[in-house]
Structure formats: structure tokens, C-alpha cells
Image (cartoon, rainbow, N blue to C red; front, top):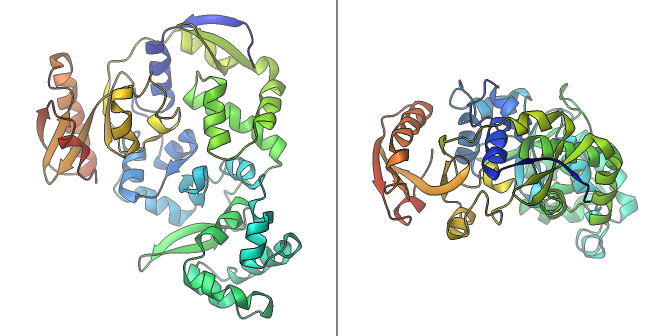
Length: 382
């Protein structure tokens, strides 16, 4: 994938430019749905973390806005990266689902044996699912009740009674359904094609280059290893395909030298990247935020190795100029920030960010600085 570099930048510049692209410095004027679209995907296994991830990137937002956007179809929820639930934009989310579906996991012998659905059975099964959801969202159990009235799917009743999580996944990958608002604590399933914002599932060879460009525009400058981590490990895109898509983008991509590391950006972003000034912004991010998950926690230019274990275990990171420099946790009205006590140059910025977080959460927060990371590895951000 290597091509000759056209400019040189520092890691501080690269992080600063990326913070701007991720609506962190300056904080964006985008809507909550716009922030989801910019990030590409937002992990939704913990709703309080997901909401904070987008609201911390919005100059104005309201509690519950992300959930309301899901109701209104401004965002969708599907199984995407690493098989986990993510918020996606309805306009662009299909590119990631196309890559995830390309592995055709439902055709594996183990799947065929367990679910007793052969590859030739799937077109009719998918049609039956869409028909079952035609009158509105259903919980997984309700969907199972409708489907298993048909002789062909009666054997799946125990699967649906147990949640059918694995069986539902490829239905989201293929665009037959998405996860809707919860009802009585249970996820619902709803048709995607009734959402007027839904962009559909493109052909995989159209989706691949679009996904690469989207990643580089938000998470660049990035190396080929970053791309394989995001789209390969994350969505099971095969290395050969990724290389073909990358090469096919040709002159649209530019290699830059980042302190000796060749990395890539989209051509129209080179000038802004080269002109970026290092950021000193302090941001409190939720655990598993896209800032650290996008490049991966092995990227020491974002997450130092000394903090990787804590960040991987969902500790809430404090970033300074884009580098994970500590952790934070809230217990009641006490906000504990660890790792920056011995950084007096950051204290005023930490206080400002505390005030901003207090505004987002709509509660008074009392800041406590500590040198211990353990104390700030516990607690709830919401």
C-alpha cells in the first residue's frame, strides 16, 4: 500500500486535526445525529456511554436526544463492528453492514446445522421476517411468535424464546431490520426500508472504498494496519479486498510522513492537516469512546501502553491534546479525575471541562484530583 509521502506532520498536529474532525476541539455544531454520522459508528451496548459520546461532541444537545433520534429514524441501531450493537446513520450505515454481510456467516456449516436453515432457505426467511414486521416493531419474542406460526420455522421457537441474538445479526447486516426503541426493557426489531432516510445496502465493492474514505476523513492520518483493524478485525473484511479497494482509490489518497510513520489521508484534507496547530484541549470521554476505539487501544500515540488495560476495560479516559492522560469517574456529585494531579498546566482546563460535563449532565459536580488511577477507573458517567 505504500506510496511516496507528499508532506510531513507531527503526531500532535495529526491528533489536533483528528480532534477537529471528531468534533472534540472545537466542540461541534452538529446535531446528535450528525455526530453519529461523523463518527461512523457509536457503540450502544451501554446507553449512558453512547449518549455521552455524542453529546460531548455537540455544543447544544438535550438529554435523551439520541434515543429520540432512534424513534424518529434519524439514527439506526444494528449489529456492526465486532458483532456488537452500534448506532449508525441511516444514510451511510449501509456501507458498514455491506462489509459485515460479505462474509455470509449464515452459510457456515455450523450455522446451517444449528438453525436448520440452508443458504437457499434464507431468501424466503428474510421475506417472512420483513412481512412479520410490516405492521410495526416487535420484540424478538413477538417476532418469533409470528414466524413460528409457519411450519418451516416452527423449529426456531426455542431460539427466539432465548433471544435469537445471533440469528438476528445477519438480518441487520442485510438490511432487513434494525433494532428499534426498547419496550418494557426489551429491544424491538423494525423494518429498515420504511425509514425514508435509509440509504440501503450498497454492493460490497462500492461500500469498501466508501468505508475507507470515511475512516480516513474522521480517523486519519491512518496506516494500513489501522484500516485492517477497523474494517478487517471490526467487520471481517478480507485483507485482499481491502488492499484492492485501497489501491483503487489511487490519487484520491495521499501519504504523509508522521514523524517517520507513513500514514494516509484523503487528498482534500492534506492542507488542513498540514496547517493544524497542536491542541491542548482537555476532554472527558466515556469508556470505549470512538476516539480510542477508532485507532484501537494498541495505538500508543493515542493510548499510552501504561493506560491501555484500563481503557480496554471501559475506564473513562481523560484526553489532553488527544492523548489519554488519565481517567475519570463520577459517583453522585463527586467527579474524580486521576492522573493529572501532577499536571498543574492542565488544572484550569480540567476545571473548564468539569463545568462542561456538569452542564451536559445537568447537575453540580465537585472536582477531586488524585494521582491514583484506580479510584477513577470506577463509577458511572451518566
